Image (cartoon, rainbow, N blue to C red):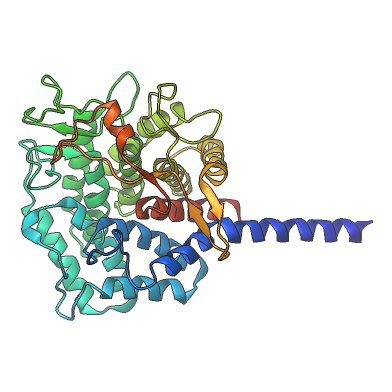
Length: 390
């Protein structure tokens, strides 16, 4: 009887292991290496450009490589970055003078390669991105503009694009004074964009209040976009990882993270375990649960718990979210890997044609399969959840 029970337990563990291999981080990585075998072609038929989408995917690969030790993942990371970085540390298609904070994102992957190889070209490329942050235009109270062509605007997205690299670079190269500036970015974003009633943060804030999307009193954009909040939550846990334990800003960021996590828990959909495209309008016509935001929230909560920034009571929130992601968005492919559905392709503010930040606007953007931002966020979430449950 004991032998039969042992066999049954072994079979059950094996089936769970196989299911995880098919649907988890390894399954998603297999898809990436199949459909983007040489480089991340976000828009088929167009030349590949330096893009933050690739950085999100490759950070997922970094987590998988560190967790498994499988060198295939490291080789994929290195080949993808070497497509852009020459021996002198120049980055193909990157323009510092655009002052686009999105372009900082891939710097974390560059730092991973530098730490692993000690190849100076990666140090030089990272230095170039650090120089952009030194020159990046700022609001009057010191917040980074999102882009040169979006003056006086801070976006939640930008905190993820810039601050984790800034913190990792500062920790690696001894720029202790930089942490005060990094802390200021998070404090300002919360101060200007957080809604005290919901605890959620608006997508963006315009200091000048000149944008058509900006509230003429507060400068805030009109809605709470799921992925924007996801970027912000991930930025907090990723930047915190590099804070010195005695730095006073660390406590500030942990407090912000806990307020953010409370809002995330409040707006989790009870039925699916996921989160909506427009977070506070679950019952409104046309709204839908969205994959990338759901993955980002699961990642931020799971990592925040693992590193001790969040209480373990968030485990049930993260687990319910991850189960919902697997059920709502993951499909198995004939090739043996997986597809992630349900990711909104893009959402922004201003520009041409003009994006007004309205509820109707956020529902107008296409929802697609295997969007790189969603794929990267899924890799990050799956890595954390697989670490949590092993």
